[in-house]
Image (cartoon, rainbow, N blue to C red; front, side):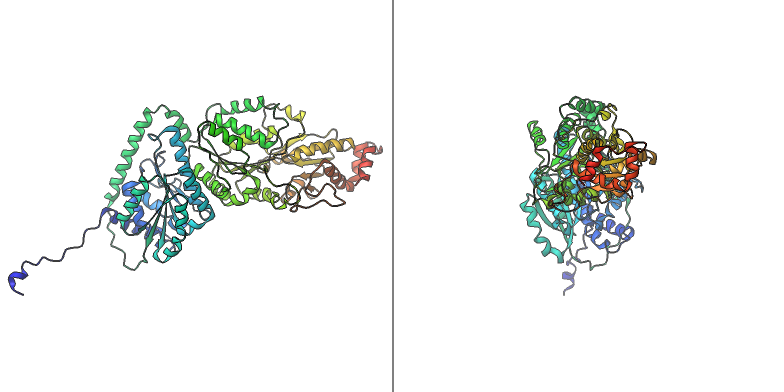
Length: 639
């Protein structure tokens, strides 16, 4: 080659300097190697490094100086694979993270598979409702959720996604990471989300420009969005890391500027005080006196109403007193009238159909978001499908209130599969779960008030649709407005004379026990009735109070469910009257049927229990060796 031609050939171009998101992604990958102790999760977390770098540096609304800013974007970590990312991002962003405070970026929902994705959709519903109330100048943020691709096929994720499309929740974006070898399996799942009204995109997990385009598209579209980040196996050595504290300075300044602008808008907003109250999860002043006055005024009208009907009226009253109340209901829930009331006031219908699995996950997200009070209304038999969400709410201490009724459950000889036999026992076995089973209108109102006070975990009210057949007990009315259910259990009616047997009941069975008490009194047996609406509260009372309520006489537990767990209240010599099978039919020696709890059956079982103590019982009943009353002999002969 001539020498003059060689002089004009330009040298090969030097490799382009990495862009800012690429440098940020390198810093994230290095931090993952330092902080992630589980080596199985580290490769999966590195898949999300590029997405996190683009999201934090360009799009995410957050201020490291104010991690609890109400209008910040929410980030939900649904899979344990990505649990290290929030702390890394917070530290790299300049937030001082202490073990006792959450990261700015926001909630980890690493509970049962798919619950985090459902909770993220619930957060988007909370954002939508708050924006409708206060306007976009005050509420204008998004929800981002990072999950594993296998969560997309879970029932809770699919039901929640269908609800997101139905409710038009366009402020939520789900992001899943996967390897290229898993692409075929994901391609069979993504069309289900498209059919549910979602915008679905697939991007290269290492291409920051593709990721930025997908995020920008998610912010423009009017649909919920799903972004699948596809990565190739890691073969190249990691890029050298150079510590640069100024990498995140621009993102921090952008977030601080956004928060200052928001504070100026909030200061001028006429609903500033109301917004701040709801953002702090505080209740309006004097709501409790208004609540008590309302149910006291309607007490005479609802004295013989069912617990489910009383709860419906109570929820209508709470809707007027607590504007933050948000109630999701199922198709067979107990609140059709309440739903019509909300629609007449211009609010959207929040019916979830039969998708109670997704409904329960959304309620957890509403509670996690802050600002709203989450209520759910469905049937008692539906708790079997909601159990993972209930368990997650109990684990995280979220205030979610459920109204569970037996409305529209099948009746008759073919209804065995629908009978709630074991549900009560299994729910009582769940830690940090408060289960209330009120007997009448007054107990229903008191239990609803207790559920509203309890902010450390979920509360369930199990409500009977059968109307009450007995008026209020006179002894009960002597206590005025005292909330006797606050102690979990109390003496509903004391024995007329010495107590010879104690009938311990919950729910509608307490009314049946009152009728049995009258029959036993006619037979010369002094029976007391103890109402036990909440086991958890009763177990928390002092031993002296529990002993005074339960007494030393033989005890009979009465509940239309399994007797599992009742021995703790009945003692070694107690007897339980309930349901221990599915759809059992009557027999000649038990004409009322094992599934029927009647006063006559309770009386026969009481006689059977007292027979070993006949000498003591007759001496107490007749006094000074007098013969027992004739009613006692006739009742004993009928056993």
